[in-house]
Image (cartoon, rainbow, N blue to C red; front, side, top):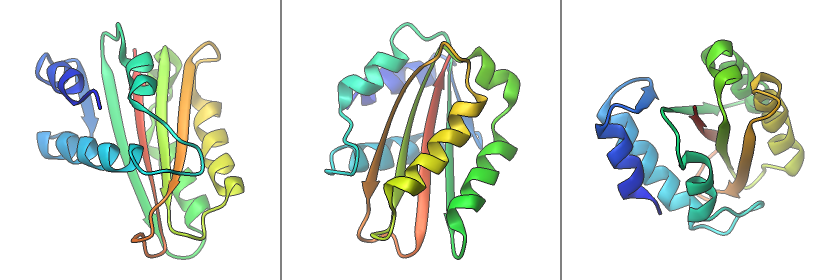
Length: 148
């Protein structure tokens, strides 16, 4: 896990966390570290994150969570509402991870992926993964990292 690298970027003022705050940033890292090491539907590893953040001038991190009925459509709406289009179009790379309850399907992951892809620069390098969290009782989380 490139925890040290992301931490260094954060303290060099290259990382913007939405919503802002150190607690959100370290919470994101903790969640990411836990999930990336869990076998999933689409597995990720440390090198995937490093591929996206290497040479980045700025990194923006989004954490979105939704529960209840129609959670996939609601999380996609939250992505559209919280992801500034000008930021997404400037991103040279994106890394995102979809984490859901045991009922999550690859179709659900595809819905989230298409929502994010539609906002990103056509030339952006994109790496994503998906995992099932047995403890996620009816929820879906999307952890998104954009590198400029």
